[in-house]
Length: 157
View (cartoon, rainbow, N blue to C red):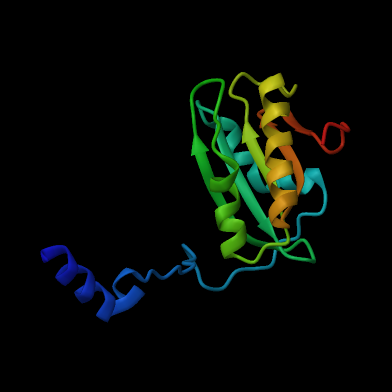
């Protein structure tokens, strides 16, 4: 009898007691100069500050149809030689910002510009997830203090 009463009270409220709201909040200034990232060199200039980090950090840059940056998020910070996160976490911000595509960027503290086998496998998984949800992975750029490596330019994406 008690469970019937509880259910009926819940029924009066319906879903309203469980409703959630998703809101995009931009950190920093409300007004910023538009940045266009159409080439890997521009991505490197945009993210080159992460080359100095002592652990791998993975960033997602969200872009609109004209390749204007609509958001940038540090998705994860890992160890000396790895950082991984599920594709759903990577695409969450892209969906919230109505991005048409994303560019991933991560640093290699070792200074090595070669993508590891794990980097390639991870990138392919992220690309497949993006194809399913309709947000394209444009590139994955490795950043070091010696320069950058674009997986798109190298034909690995």
